[in-house]
Image (cartoon, rainbow, N blue to C red; front, side):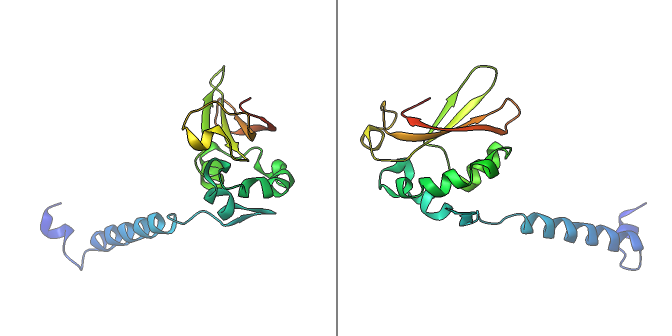
Length: 142
């Protein structure tokens, strides 16, 4: 098939190709959405806005977080990152597992990035396939 046949509007293949391009464009654009502001009882906008727990907002949201633990388990690491924001600490564990750690209160992590902290935190264990399997509360890192 030559170029004249492909660009001829009377040719059905030309229409199909443009329709396919339009459909793909719509799919790509519709998948670009912002993260939700609420996840059950947890206000995600406030959670994400308190990086490192340095403003004390996450501590007030701990009860809402606890209420949603079962709904967070099984979610992918990408989904957890979209909902809760980038973790304060991303800790590698054995067997290709990792922890996403979010601090709940102000501490040394606010003054010095990477500084050892014993502030209250929540840790989300990600399995080797990238799913949230366990969520724990502790002081500092697990």
